[in-house]
Amino acid sequence: MSPLPEHLLQATRSRTEKVEKRARAALAQLAKAGAPISFTAVARKTAVSTDFLYKHPELRSLIERHRTKGGQVTGARSAEADSSSTSAAVRALGARLAQQRQSHHQEVALLRKALEVTQGENLALRRRLAQYEVD
Image 1 (spheres, one colour):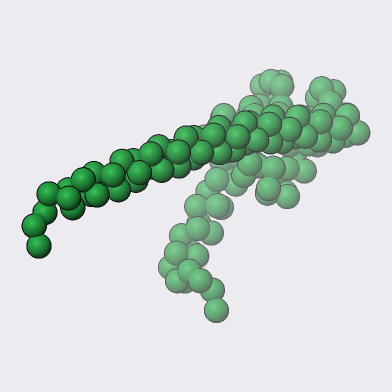
Image 2 (tube, rainbow, N blue to C red):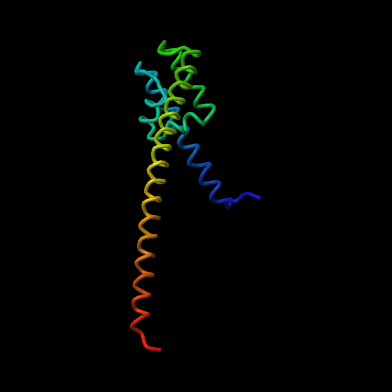
């Protein structure tokens, strides 16, 4: 059984079909105008994410074919460029994540130390108060 109700699945399919049609139309317009064809150019013209274009197999192959026809990027070079830019992005995000993790660990250590100090002060005040309380 699907986690989504049927009406939501239909709405998603309908929206996807509309975006596919817009992407194909944008691709045709770019090709007709002789403009450089890339995933970014089609995404901007279509108002859709490049992620959608990359994940949609038919649109991806269409864009890659048009891009190759334009003489901008050959198939072997495009795969190499995509993988190098992807790995560079992954490395950059990994480094940023490691830096944030270290920063958070330092912040947590400082907060724990402050909590220990506060709990110690609280205990000392409770002991002083206990001296003045009459049972």
